[in-house]
Image (cartoon, rainbow, N blue to C red; front, top):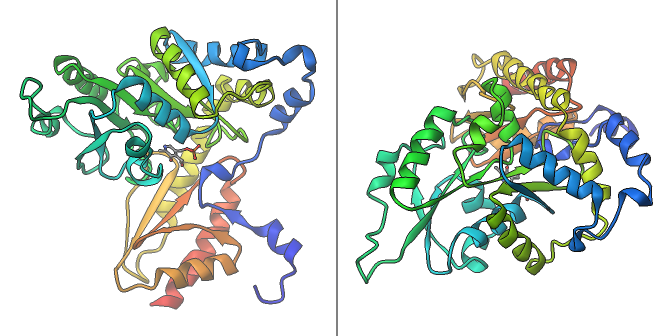
Length: 358
Ligand SMILES: Cc1ncc(COP(=O)(O)O)c(C=O)c1O
């Protein structure tokens, strides 16, 4: 860090590792501070009015019968898997999906499911890719494949967006094959904003969807699952089983209510513009890089296998820029709090680091 003092360093840090690093907006703090005991109750008894309002608002937005506040996206996905399957079933998961890579194998350890993996170019299958993976239900030797999961936007594929048209085709496939359909929609509002469509255009094709309040929507904690009333009744029980009954959780839900206002969802457009600015501005003449044009707020930059990525990450950190290495790729995620000026600063510094590395 040279001679920079810790405080100076902190002030200048531009954290592009993830949109989970976001902190609440002033409006969120205002609503939070205006809470009093009349806004809170025991949510396990379904008596927290603020949680109830958030769950209803989420269900409304996504055109589902009911919603459920959960602690995190990982918990939301696990509860959804538990509520849609029976142990011993198989779940169709994308090879690069968050559920498969980053949720500690809870689909297996806790839900008792076997992964039946599909591979894709951009994160989303066509029904023809899945046909051969399905087990034969009336063959006594084979387990049952009962659930299809998709991730939208897709993190490890670089924030790619699955369109309602693609989802509609997959919905038809799940109906024809008696599968349930779950969407890990941690960033579904990014997908909606990217394609300029209402979010229910996406959610209407799945049986259940988890979305995160704590990513681009910049709440400090929480995710919401939505689905049919029957599904949410089951999900509520599994949430309790997993220790996710949070009592006076209106404290969390109050900020979620701000996040689900239209202007706050629309704000995600800024993040997408900044991601495009970053991707366009990376100077690939100095060092061979593969940069895929971002569809939402995630930019992956692929380095040649011989380039020392650790050195790049370290040099960027030295300039006050934090990013995340995934094998030979570096991930930059734009989010609330990152401005166009920040991106221009990053471009200047990153391009200079890259030319020094050739
Ligand atoms: C696509 C996706 N799904 C689920 C999650 C899990 O969310 P959480 O960190 O709240 O458990 C993440 C987190 O980064 C994610 O990117």
